[in-house]
Length: 251
Image (cartoon, rainbow, N blue to C red):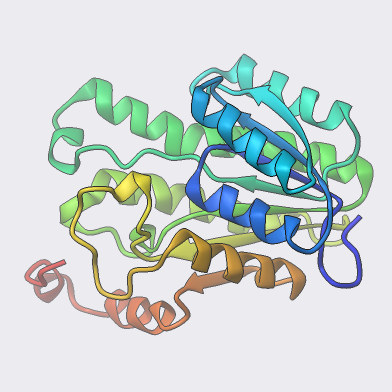
């Protein structure tokens, strides 16, 4: 269970090598020892992450997860919950892809749709079923401001995040009264391995900043947060810009 200080006893990272996910784990590990389940492909990066968290005092379990494989997703959730209740589960994986290639390449657009939308939705249902059975838990969905108003410059990625974001908001409503809550996190540009090599956008943040905001959001039982907070005002304005003008903006 999550204690009075907002710290969980157990944490599931779906996308356990994500910079943001690991920053969240470090943040919680600084408060108390906890059980961490790292669900990701079996890679040296996952092993290194597990070793780092173990050094911080965490009990770490490594679980194989292939996001595009439904059987792998189901097996990962079963294995994660077999070790006991999960207090906080973070859905943290995703692909950015090449924006111009994505809308002309059938294979790439299929991969983006599966990884960024189909897999998170499937896992959301699996997680909610498990957490309803234990009568408590928080699901954290790492979304993106790219899904708030989809731009021409990355509309394939933005559309997948828009769908994923909408699903988790709806899931939160559906879970009201069950003891399970959902937090949708909408970061702006995050300086991480996913965006390595891309020019930083205004209001760019670090994985650590997203982690701090997420941990606070879970503690405060928030439903949606923007990181950084001023991004909420920016996106509110952009949502109301007429389309002819919007398409001329350098974004």
